[in-house]
Image (tube, rainbow, N blue to C red; front, top):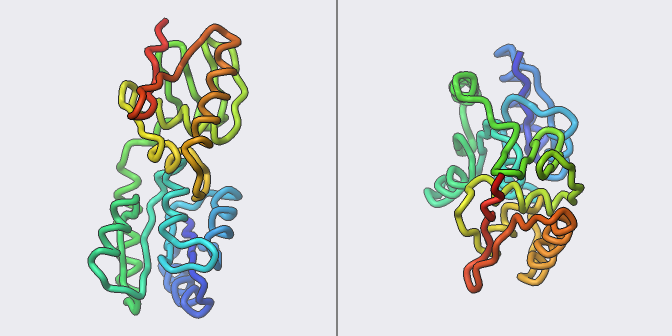
Length: 226
């Protein structure tokens, strides 16, 4: 039976959602804030997340961004605001649906059923990325060059993963900052440049250069030819 993670700082609302989902035959888990939601996801990824937009410590939109860097789990946003721009932002950053509080528990259950059916028919997410001699295993977080393993930090892995999603595309520093970090944080251009230098140094020991710099624009993956 699908398991739903309910993320909201209001215990009463979590209870309403939990009861509605339990009656519909789903199992549930709960988190009161963003960090707890990310921890719950790491402990046991759910089949769908009901995610409040306004959370203490870390907003729901930031939780969504962090999850989208490593998962395509369906996310249904809940919000007390009915502004169209909020809905658009929620969907553009990776949300799958959006409901405004107060809402009908029956409608919530109906929307969750639709999202789960949609996810069941979707193609499974890629578990590996490769380009020439370079390969990344997204499940084991293993990086290899011509079969030889190279140990990278989480951020360094995130940089290569981002570049590998679109070989040949130039990513600006801002894009790498946004996509490579596991959680939202503000870093400088020099910080991202330092991470890129460390990646290059680790590959240089094997005579490899996986990242190209385009002055004034950003970075892209090199050809990594066989």
